[in-house]
Each structure stands twice: as C-alpha cells, then as structure tokens.
View 1 (cartoon, rainbow, N blue to C red):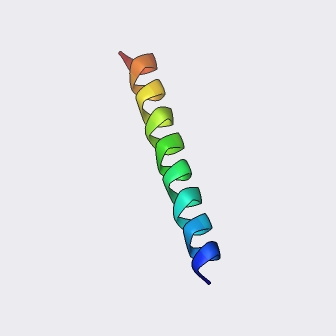
View 2: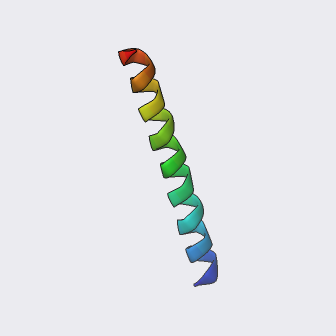
Length: 31
C-alpha cells in the first residue's frame, strides 16, 4: 500500500509540473 501511495504521489507531482509548464508556455505564446 505504501509503495503504490508513493507512486501515486510522484505521478501527481509529475502531472502538476507538466501542467504548470504547459500554462507558462501558453502564456509566453500569448504575450
């Protein structure tokens, strides 16, 4: 259970960073 939970947390952080990068990229395109 602990291993899958850590995997889920790491995946969640990876998705969050990807989303932030995508938002910054779109903002740069709009500017």
